[in-house]
Structure formats: C-alpha cells, structure tokens
Length: 369
Image (tube, rainbow, N blue to C red; front, side, top):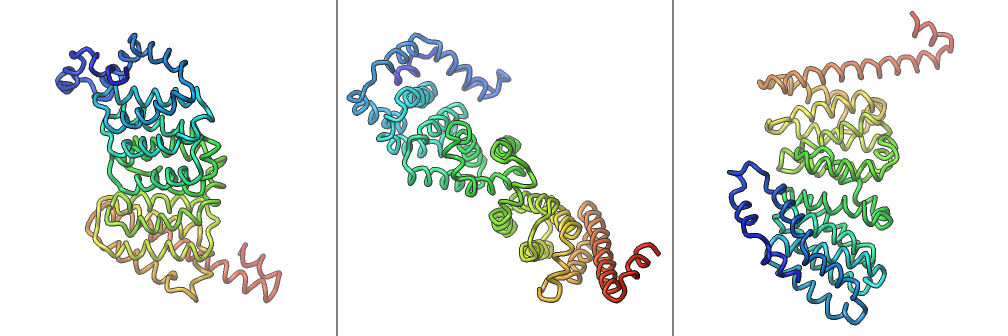
C-alpha cells in the first residue's frame, strides 16, 4: 500500500512539478500539495486502519520491510508515506519500539543525509525524532554527533538537515535532548549567525527553547563555545569566519570571560586581521572592539605575561586603518577609538588604585578634580 501511494498519484501533479518554474510555484509548496492530496486518499485511510492490526508478530515481519522501503522507496508520496507511517507506528506502539529503534534509526538517518526533497526530508527527520525516544544510549549519542557533523560539512543541504533534525529532537524527544545540551547548544549558538536564514532561524529556535536566559546560557557554555569559535576563525570559509566573529562579539558583550579566554580570542582575531581581506571581514574588528570595551580588565591583567597586550592590539588595528576598502577602514577607525577609550579607562583605574593606597582621601580628590 505504501508503494502504491506514488503509482496511484494523479500524473498531472507529477507533470506540474517538472514544470514548476513556469507555473510560478515553489517546489516545496507543490510537494506539500501532492502530499496533502495523497493523505486524503482512501489508501491512507486503509493504512490507518491497518495500523490498528499491528501486534508483536506483525512487527517482526513489518519492520524489515519498512527498512527496505526507507532505503529504496521510489516516488515522493511513497517516501513521505513510509516516514509518516513509521511516526504513527511509533506513537501507537510506544515502548514496544525499543527493540526495533536501532534498526529503523540507522536506516532513516542514512537517507536523511542525501534526501533532496524538502517534504521527504522533513518527514524522515520527524520519524527519526519520534523513534529517538526509544533508542539506546549509544544510538542516541551517535545521532546527536552525526547531526552536529552534518552542520560542520558546511553545505546548504547538510546544514538544513542538521538544523531540522536537532529541532525535531528538541520538540519530540525533549527529555533525551536535555542530556545533550553541552554538545548541541554551543553549536546552536554559533549557527544562529549563519547567513542562510532558514538554517539560522531553526538554530535560533533551538537555542531559545533550551535556554532560560541569553546571558546566563552564554556564560554557562562559554568554555564549549570558544573552541568552536576559534576553530571557525581558522576555517578557509569566510562565512564560517564571519559567523564565529559575530558569536565572539556577543560573548564579549555579555562579559564574564576569564583572562585566558580573552587572550585566546584576541590572539585568533589579531592573527586573522593580518590575513587577506574577505567580504564582511569588518566583523573581526567589531569583535576586537567588543572585547576591549567589555573585557579591558582581563587584558590589563594579562598584559605583562602574555604576547597579546594593548600595544599589539593597537598595532593590529592601526594596520587595518590603512586598508583601502572603505567599509573595512571605517570599522577599523571605530575600533581604534574604542581601544583608546578602554586603554584610557584602564590608565585611570591604575592611577586611582595607586593614589588610594597612598592616601584614601586622595582618591576622592582625583575622581572629582
């Protein structure tokens, strides 16, 4: 019956998809229409009825056939249909799915990766998430790690699949998802700044749904976010560099970073500033500016023991001021202004601390003279 969902489809709909550009309709919208028509058919009513007849003995025969159909099913409605059927079967059988969860999850995860159809991909991802509640710890660990790895592949299709899968896991298997916050949320934080709005919006949802407050969450996961940001800055892709720099800016604005963390971020930013110019590189200067403004105390604390100090920061920003690109040069001048302000404030604090040690009354006179 699942195989016949595609063969019984009105061929005019299939023809329309082949000429979707001429019709002025998006492929995804037409696919959703085809799936909706299929689900209103008598065949789906029969499938719903057959679900009620499934018992333990039927499951032993049914699951291998479903796995085969997931891997080799042909046609949009068949591929969406088998995924929807697995989701419905999981809802009905509940904990009885535990012994089959690993087999189904492995098959679904494999085809999600390469699925081109938006409707099929969404249905397959939803089926994955529904089964995850009943999978073993090792299988779940692999599922989350593979989902993160998909995003790191940095292709549009892989990133969308990653975001969809993690969002569905957050919705459908939240109790399981909570146990993997440390693995998922740092990546979600960085991915919120992805240039693909479809991807960034989904990761924004994941971040918002699983954190109680922006500032607290960023401070809580800073130790995991910073290594990801540093790795992204060294990536050959300028889009990766850009979103990681934006993430660093947000982290710095919240504050609470240690001197060691601040130094590691500044080193990476200054090193990247000296490399060739790329589109949007001014975000690096925004990050340096944010760190100097909000973490000046940590910079001062490490100035005598670290290779990065106010002098090296100033030199890197001054070099950026000499670039010909107007947007980048303007950002460099703004950054230079912030560095000067932060350095001046640190000088005031240093002088004030010396004066206060010599004579407590002098501090008041110094501040208000």
